[in-house]
Image 1 (cartoon, rainbow, N blue to C red):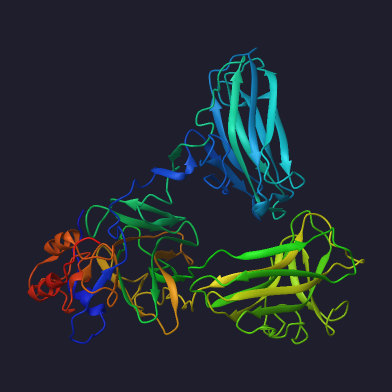
Image 2 (image 1 turned 45 degrees about the horizontal axis):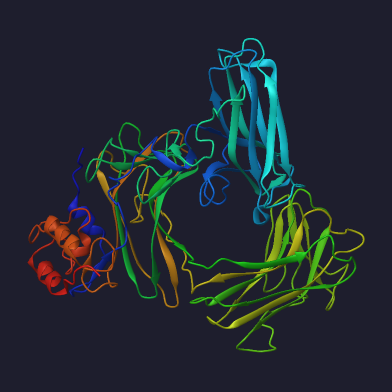
Amino acid sequence: MRGQRSIAAAAALMLALPLVLFARQNILKNGSMERGGGPNSIDPFVPANWTEFGINVERSAQYNLTPPGDGHALKAFGDGTSNTSGAFQEVSPVSPGQSLDVSVMLFTPANDKLGGSGSAGLVLEFLNQFGGTIAGGRFETYVLDASSPADTWIQAALGPLVAPANTAKVRVSCKLNWTPGDVSGAVWWDDAQLSINGGANQLLNADFETAGNSPGQSSVGIDDWVGFNDQEKSSDVAEHGTSSLKLGVREAYSGLYQDTRTLNAGDHLVMLAFGYIPSTDPLVGTTRAGIKLEFVAPTPPAEENLAFDENDPTDTWVLVELDTTVPADVTIARVVMVYAGNGQTSGAVYFDSAFAERGSAPGANQLANDSFEFGSGGANGIDDWTEFWSEGASQARQDCFFVAEDGLCSVRATGTAVAGIYQEISVTPGESLSIRARLLSHTFEPLAGTGRAGVKVEWFRGGVPDDVDIGVPNSSPNTIGPGAATNTWLPMMIDYTMPDGSSALARFTNIIEKGTAMTGRVYFDSCEAVVLNRFDGADSDGDDDQDLLDYAELQRCFNGSGGGLDWGCMVFDSDDDDDIDQTDSNFFFPRFIGPQ
């Protein structure tokens, strides 16, 4: 259904602006939520014909075995609360007395190696006609764990196995198990095979190349957007067209976001959306809903040298170095002393004498407190540095009692997860950067297992502004909540100018914060994000030109003086008077340049 937009309410949100003509560019796609398959749509992260279990499993394009070349495999990884994940497929009919062989190939990469208690493999279950596992009919093999070689495809195989009495079908599972919290890395499966009496493979989509339907809510059910938690495309109500976004309160936070364009200092962005609270299931308690402007640093990949491991001599300060070149447009380098522990790691690593040398300042150390002498100790107690760790699993702290290469103090890192300390410095694109530190493993607590340590650099382009978060319900212009009018579309807005020295990717997020509520839902529609001073003209589809597609949209939006603004028309309102009239048309046509 089509809702009635309150033009007056939307106009009331707009800030007073000078009476000049504005050149505008829309940077948001599918803001009316019309395109997309919605719930149960094809999801590139779901393998067809397989049923996923656990929360950490997906179809992945990172690694592939079959067919040769680029492709997909099944990926799973662990977490701190659950203990298993994977996917299964049931095959029928299978009869008693038949002989079955089943196999699959497994892989873990060096840069995300399975660690801790994680073990991955293959399970075959013989099932009766009701789907129950027959007594003695479960077989499993786990061939990949922390001790397995990285970057190598390893086969897991079962059989030949004879189907017992009462067999009607079988279940083949690719499965990862772990002890909660004691796991790191990930595992991939590919080329699954099930042969009955030596025949052809009975598994469908055995190479995971075909994407399947999401089980219910889909993270990609609305084109150009990414959803999380309790969200889905809906036709219950719509402010524009026939579809909208529906958000519920099943999780602490749920929403839908879209990464738009990189904005720079001075860019003036206006974001609009409309929210609808149904009287049959209104927002209650401390629930908040609204639009949020988030900033993501468009950064090149980090670089690291984790050269220190259990093979280095104890009680000896070992130099670890990283030499690199600052990427284009990067102005900030985060220098990191990093300890990469996992479930197979014991002992501790000490860091001292950190050094960062820029090519533009040879011989000068850019790091303050480079020997970690100053600070109060404890968590985040080292001056000029920021510590990071996993609560209950690892730590990085100043140590002034045991060993030091320079002065009296060093940094001690230990545990079964990643930990470390970092400091940010200014750099210039194209210049060389050399990072080094001294690392030591002491005889009393030597580093052992598969953990490693070293130095790392992370890059940042310009300053990243603080996010514009949702605020006070029904008071902040971008936030609604309990007590707001129901069964009507409520306008929300963010008006933001990028500060000096900033540069970041702008993310448009529709979000609901559950708070204390156990019920309630809200709908979002007619989202717009327009940069008022980016483009000389009116670029409605964000393709950096003003062409026939933009002209077609201008015709749709044209309604004369006082006609108001429909969805997607703000980009043409050059004089900011909340209509698309002859003044806007006169501004548009001299700037018509066609496709570029």
